[in-house]
Image 1 (spheres, rainbow, N blue to C red):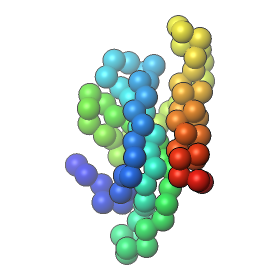
Image 2: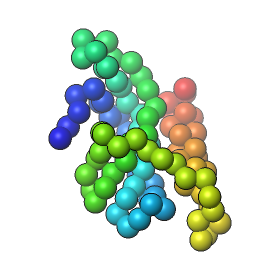
Image 3: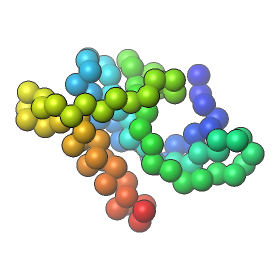
Length: 89
């Protein structure tokens, strides 16, 4: 189900260590919490399960090391920084 609170301008998909076909979606876009057309720019992280975006499950960004030595936290923060640079935030 689409959530009209969020309007995505860009999404960066990052594989999560939570399991197969589970991704973080690091997004830049606009939010309208009161649904009154007061759109505000925002960076936000959503979860995606088997190709379906979850607006109900908050992301839990793990900080322990993955088998390749990286962390989900580092990957998400790198994506956030890329959006920061691209959109001059």
